[in-house]
Image (cartoon, rainbow, N blue to C red; front, side, top):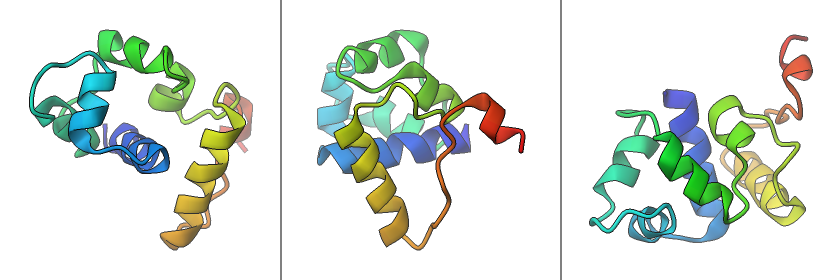
Length: 101
């Protein structure tokens, strides 16, 4: 859940949204608490919420597995830039096969 939360944080920052904006994007009408819980790794994002994000270009395989193959190029580049700026020079895997190396 922590890794999923980390990816959700990177995604939110790459999109330039607040937690409330992301909550609305995934179909929640609350104050962003659900998103906060997902991002903090306290709860795993629900499939329904993830499917809503997928409608906006946030691929399910990125959310749940860390694969980048279905992310829009612009979003992927922003996520990679954020990782570099944060001192994390980890190359994002593009497929599950590359995770096994």
